[in-house]
Image 1 (cartoon, rainbow, N blue to C red):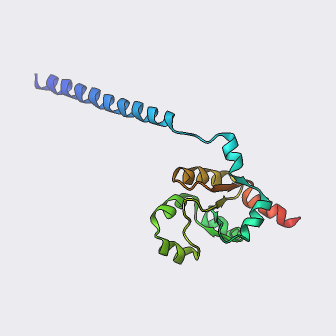
Image 2 (image 1 turned 135 degrees about the horizontal axis):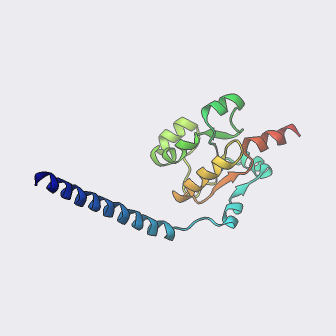
Image 3 (image 1 turned 120 degrees about the vertical axis):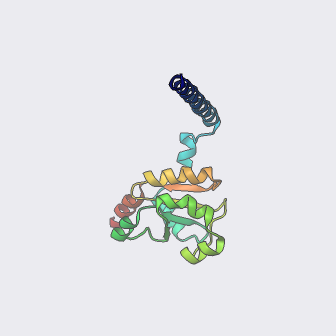
Length: 158
């Protein structure tokens, strides 16, 4: 008798657990379907090319962030005029560092939500992912350097 009661209680527990999981999944699915995603036109308008990057490198109000990994930076150097924050650290750095700590670490002012930020990686794919992430954090002027380091390097050889 005792053994069958345990099986019965275990069955109820498993059913409740399943219901909790599926109700959470349904709620998060509903929330996600209502969130705004960037259209292709939005993405294109928030991209920069080599010539726009050259202008930005001479504009102290623009923050350029090279999001490649340390090993990549060690191999090629960072994009001129940029600061280096690895891809996985960008959002946390922008959210958690105080203005003072950001200035001490990067010798640049911490960006405000409306500061123009240009993100770059090797080819523009990872920086595009970071761009989407920080746009969601409210950094409304986050741009992606399409082509990244590969584009920069090929244009420097011309």
